Length: 340
Image (cartoon, rainbow, N blue to C red; front, side, top):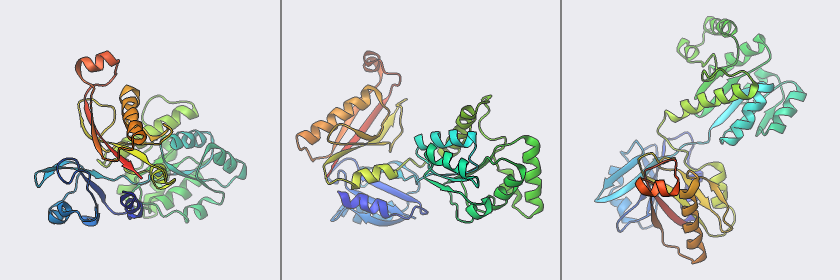
């Protein structure tokens, strides 16, 4: 089983990666990995994935599929989301703290040592205390990198933006007045930047919620980033923390994955939670009584040495939801797999 997660860990994050799991029939829980529409890994000896390889390599969107009379859960794997913040002021510190909570790998560029130290204390993964142009030269950017410019002055905004608009990115946002932002944009276009990229800069930055304090502004920015991020149908996949926990200690644990969801269940297909022997978890499938039941089931599997994977059906609709006091209703099927 761990071979699969090792293979996931080795996937090129710049490719379009998909994980396939059979959720019924003779090939139940057999798995395969696609990277840019090529099957790069499959369960050893799997005749199912061998027989239907060509058909499965055509898949492009996550969801449930029926192939060869068996249902396949296909998930488009999300990649590690990176947040690059130019500037280490009060808004940046608040954004760092919230970015850590929501799973971003955070890099801060700040040329003032005292503000760089504040960024480290707030939880940034990496702080580059150099000039902005020097720091940005060390960041290549990609389709999963979110850039936020929150420097202390117009001159520094211009330096940062001139470099960032020429890098691959998922999002570019800039803190500043409309006038200040307009001046920066005009200069970028005059200097040869792509007008479409410049036109796509989010500014005024953040969702319009009437934010005033640094913390409120950080909430508005992060909400806008989440909105941009969720437009893609990929899921969160296997985060750094999840893979580290799976591949860490050589002890049995249970991975719970939502594979079927109908109604208003709180989390979508592909959401994962790793259940450890002591009862602690990495990740969440939505909290509340549903998660508690899944946790109990996973712990029983570990205590009873039940290594056979199971589909755990949870009905949150009708009287069941009312009796349990659930906020959401709907139905989910959770795949429980012991990893050892």
